[in-house]
View 1 (spheres, rainbow, N blue to C red):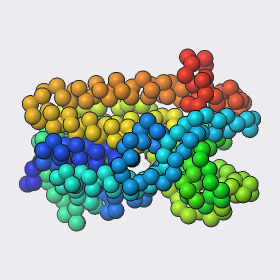
View 2 (view 1 turned 30 degrees about the vertical axis):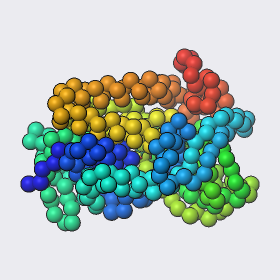
View 3 (view 1 turned 180 degrees about the vertical axis):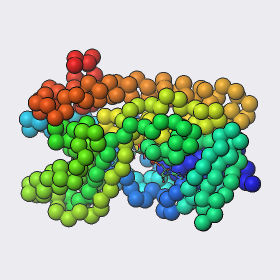
Length: 356
Ligand SMILES: Cc1cc2nc3c(=O)[nH]c(=O)nc-3n(C[C@H](O)[C@H](O)[C@H](O)COP(=O)(O)OP(=O)(O)OC[C@H]3O[C@@H](n4cnc5c(N)ncnc54)[C@H](O)[C@@H]3O)c2cc1C
């Protein structure tokens, strides 16, 4: 049976960062992903805000800079805010992080899918090339996204998620801001347009408990923007996916297993942004495992504490904001600008105490 220091499940930004960091520290690392081609299909609007864009700086993934955000309220009122960032080629970003992990010495298997876990024996079963392979590990990083197989195998509850649908469409004139629509037509979420040179990612996220039909509202918005001449009618690419919106998992550490990125619930429950948190948590988890295996008995617990310190307050506020709006969707209050302002990061009201 193959035996490794660290087994990483998932080679998105979280897993690739964990594998790269741990391999650089000298660990024997195996990282697996069920995808044949890493990074594809892209399930992302591909935006990273500036404070986090250092993670894309050294990689050949920049597509355009963003200077601001335009938020459109139910009344049609428009609010501009500074919100600088980068649009990236997300597939290339994931692959660049994976290449870096491999260059640091990590072994990468893809496609290879985790099918079973025995945490007591520290063994995993991975299906690769039609065969079930048993692997022994000393530590495990769960970087397998919002519907984590690791979490399910450990008997942990699934994360609360939002559903998304996104079209990539031609963009008819250059834009340097992201556009956000806040409306009762997008209950529990919002609609977005993120410009990427001559195309744009146009999408929406909805709470499936409030509304299941995503196609109609997205096609309606697409048609409207096409009529305005901003975007073309062609749909170049379709994607979607789940976004965790319940905040952090109860525990980010389970024995010798650490959760990172979406699998940890680190995605922002209001904006849905999670690339940077995945990279940061991945790097910390890789370093924590290396320290732990080198004899620092507190390193895994410290990982959890660090992540809670760094991300906990912003995530808790976002969860609270979501909850305060939850019962207002599909009522007249959801059609008021004031209500939507309390639920979106561009407005001062978002950062004030709950009033509902
Ligand atoms: C439509 C959409 C738009 C988004 N837009 C943005 C954005 O603009 N900016 C931003 O910051 N964030 C955005 N996000 C969120 C962002 O994509 C995630 O937060 C980010 O991908 C999290 O990285 P991760 O490494 O934790 O997980 P993932 O990127 O989900 O990677 C998990 C990996 O695990 C693999 N995997 C899963 N199960 C198994 C298994 N059993 N065995 C082996 N491998 C497995 C998967 O194949 C996948 O490659 C968006 C999300 C969606 C759905």
